Image 1: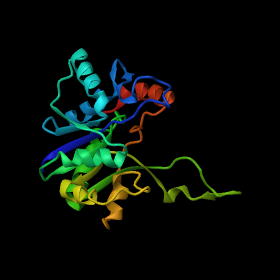
Image 2: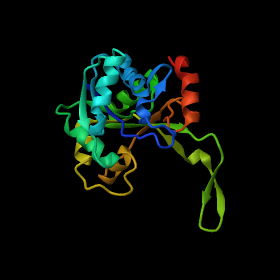
Image 3: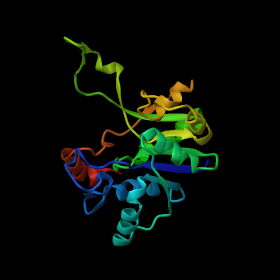
Length: 223
C-alpha cells in the first residue's frame, strides 16, 4: 500500500529560548527537521513527503536545503492557525489512497520498528497510535488536593499517528473542537476506534534545551 509522510512543523522555539524556529535548530550539525525527514526516507525511499510549514518559513526551508545539500522531493503546504488546520491542509494535498504517517517535525528519533509497527497495524485495522508506558508515578490534581492514580492504566502518546488516508481525511471534515489535541482525538470524535501499538521510548518531542541534549546523546544509538 502506498505510503505518505505528513510532517507538521509549526513551532517557533519559545520554550527553547531560541530565535530560530525549533524545527530548524541544529542537532548534531544539521537542522532537526532534516533528521526527522531522513527517518522516513530510510524506512521507505519511495515514501511521498508533505511538509506543513508556516508560509513565512518556506524560504528558510529552501535556503537550508541549499546550504546542507538536502534534496528530498518534498511537497510544501502552508500551515494554518492551529495544528488541526495545518494537518487538514496537509491531508487536502494528498489525493490517493494509502497509509499516511502524521508526524511532529521535532521528533527525529522515531525508530524503523515504530514506523513498521504503525504501518502494519494501520493496514490491518485502519489506524495506529504509537504509545509508551508511563514509568514515573502520577497524581491527579484537583482544585484543592491531589491523589495517586494507577500509572499502568495510562500511556504516553507519540507520533506518527498513522491512518488509512480515506479514514483520516473524512474525520478532518468535522468542525474543529478545543479537545482536538492530536489526530487520534479527531478520529475518535468521528466515531472511529483507535488502535494502540508500541512506540519507542527514544521518540521524544524536542521542546526544551534538555530535550536537545538528550536527542544528541541518543541520535547515533537508534537502529
